[in-house]
Amino acid sequence: MDQTNTSGLLDLIDTHVHLDIPPLSSDPQGVVLRAREHGVVQMITIGVDLDSSKRAISLAGRFRGVFAAVGIHPHDADSMSREAVKELERLASFQKVVAIGEIGLDFAKGYSPRARQRDAFVRQIDLALRLSMPVIIHDRDAHDEVLGILDGYRGQGLSGVIHCFSGDAAVAGHAVGLGFFISVTGVITFPKTDALKEAVKSIPFERLMVETDCPYLSPAPFRGKPNEPARVVYVVKEVARLKEVILEEAASRTSANARALFNLPHPRQERDVL
Image: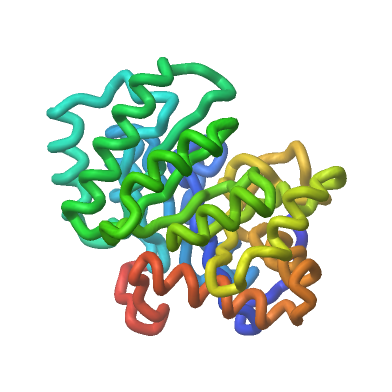
């Protein structure tokens, strides 16, 4: 882990972490404390099925600055049922749950049939609208289909973020036109990602957020190693470079966007144990 201490200098929010997945799950307290040492004051730990959503809620309850999202990932779309929707609705009522996610489409792996993925995606969007909550969208090799589904909700008040964005400037522009935010990961620090970097340049700052998607997608120079929320600072540094602003501005603006979308309290208002 890089030892640069940015605590007190930056206001960072990692909008997408998986604290319940190994190796992070073996020491979530250590992960949270290291993140704070690097200026990460808040983070959202994400559910990918009912069990992990419950774990996310438990983790959010343990730590100051940690919030949760509940949802069923497209890989697990086969588990979607009426009962699952009811359980997600129950879980979404817990304190510190701030979004429905991650949900969406993944046509790269094919772990679930595409028809089942679409059904699960739409059911969870409908749930989010009913609960007036934002969505966190997983979109892998499915840009046209994801945007087509979101187009169908135009004007209905749906809000959310395309997480781990992997499209180009045209895809980003379409999503932003629908009122969505775009969140980028350590992938923007990799070489040979020119289209993604150009997309970041094109996205209005007021629609841009950052994440690690840890324990995946460690930024350079940690590529191939387990990721942590502390390393979101490397994502923000690259955003600052691409947007030609100072680091502190990139941090404050992306964090302000996260607080607006997810209705996060100011850190000084939190009263959790740790």
